[in-house]
Image (tube, rainbow, N blue to C red; front, side, top):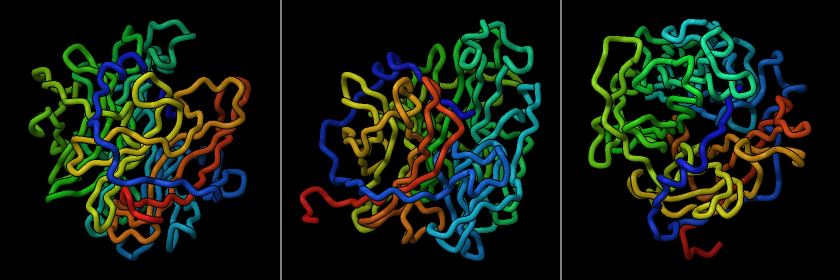
Length: 387
């Protein structure tokens, strides 16, 4: 299961947001609509919400959305309000015990297409050494202590009906191999959606770091998103950092990417408001002593993707980051999609859009796979604008 347990102390060390207030305000509607409910809509037991929803329009103007588990199937329909799960599996890993194969567990986590036929996907790939005899961590700590995560690339040439992993698939990896004694989760995790600006494509991803790289959220850029080795990370001045496959020939250690504040993890979605050109990001966070007074979904704004406002609370809720004890449900994996988006990849919004997220039942002190994909209206107004 795609989990999001992270280190609060490391995050607090990297948060230093711009002091200015957001130039826009989001308001969350009260009505909750069900988008996907497994008992009603699933093809089999693999179909549960487990990733931030991503959508694009194919060449026939049909919408494809990825929002479920590692047996990757698409919700398809004529618009966001009429999506139905297509039972055809478009991408699935084999649970390979070889970490160099990048074929253990895979989630389609971000997509991009220019023409609706050729689709570039960024895959959140998990390798769990404890399931393959490649971990020396005690069983009670093995879940995180044996988890090695990599962002890899897969492409489609048939409008998203099938995806194939590239022969050299690594987009972003820690500069070392999976280690039986690593002791904590390592690598790059949970990329945001891909957006376009000034001839380039961008996405955010969080990394747990290593000596020479602090924990944080890295910003990536590429002019050719279908080529995994074309993605480079922001070093604070330029996009100069590229990450090699640690199972390939030895490479020099990469420079440090500059963590983008105030995000504790990669935003669930980044969108650009039509007219104002303002970037808006939604991110889930847990309570801390600086930016996040309560756990929940927050939003921030930017003009350039590198400098962001202080976050504002959109929805107070326990998430997968929080202790589940005593809760009935947790909410996670937020995304923003506009029914009236003008771009093929749903990277733009107007003054009204939808907040999508997964709502999951809690059993005792554990979250479960009893999950529903839901959405709620959000209204976006420029600061000072009358509603």
